[in-house]
Length: 144
Image (tube, rainbow, N blue to C red; front, side, top):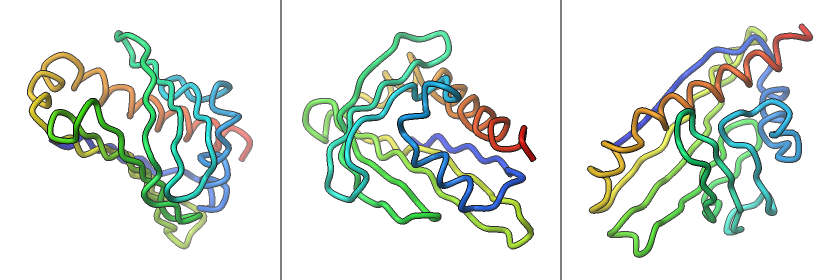
């Protein structure tokens, strides 16, 4: 199962990346992922707090699998063994060359619990991704 959202932001890719990578500022603008703690490099474990709209807050401890400044941040988290539930979360940025950035935000889910997750939290998660995208866009464009 995949959830993917996209938004175009009227800001250069470097500015979008700097806001996305500034984990300490998340509480001031990001109403979905409210906190991230940890070192920003591949192989490092993060502590991620989320507040899905209409859902219960949750904390995950994923591992960064890809960290390419101005391009991509990706992490993988599991609930129990990978065959039970695995989520590969990603943020991808594309420089459009005109001062705008395409921001792709998604997650690939796999494992036996995915049908249950889809039923109970799939829509809330997709709404949360969209909310985060809109918050990021608004935060970066309000000073333009």
